[in-house]
Amino acid sequence: MMTNLFSTFDPATSLNMSLNWLSTFLGFTLIPTAFWVLPNRINMLLMNMINKLHDEFKMLLGPSSRGMTLMTITLFMFILTNNSMGLLPYIFTSSSHLTFTMTLALPMWLSIMIFGWVNHTNHMFAHLVPSGTPAMLMPFMVLIETISNLIRPGSLAVRLTANMIAGHLLMSLLGNNSAGASGTILPLIISIQMMLMLFEAAVAIIQAYVFSVLSTLYTSEVMYENT
Image (cartoon, rainbow, N blue to C red; front, top):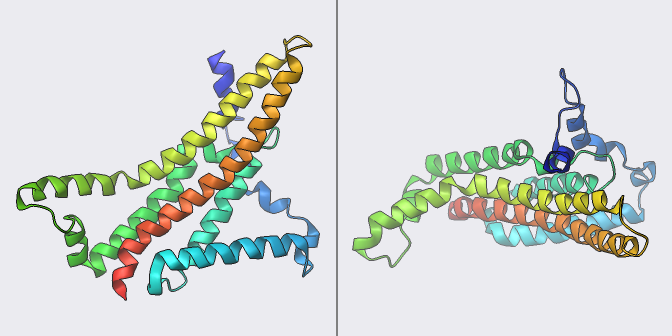
């Protein structure tokens, strides 16, 4: 039962090449032609969302944003597209794999760390010891801050993966049980599935937002001192 339940996350479709990963780019092929006719409602909705995100990310990054909001907004839209596509039937959820999420989190975190240590070395050393820390606790605070910095890409990747897996597992479990359910319980299972679908749609948006906001906050720790 557990093998069948987790087989929905199996990316292997053949021994030679895994075609399931093509779903990562499937969202871009489904953009309707009317999207390119301006102005239209889809474009207006997206532009309003992008402008709101730009204002918020610019506030988090401070005066030294210098176009960094473009990267974080692109990251948000890319994750949101993959999370939303995973809710559709027979489409592989690429964001439920650490291969996908770690590919996004690790290069972003590594580039931030390299930029900070190369350009603001003193600030990065000072950041390891929060202000007001007693001298006796300084070695422990350096160790704790170092560990917290090292686990940041892992926490970003695991957070997104775990949230995507949890909801999909629950929906798969209910879907498997609905096949042999009686006529009295079936409407209840369908109602729960509908509520779970709405909840997963909200999770898809929230997780993309959380990933991009945390990436912005990690960047602001380095970029803000550049003003």
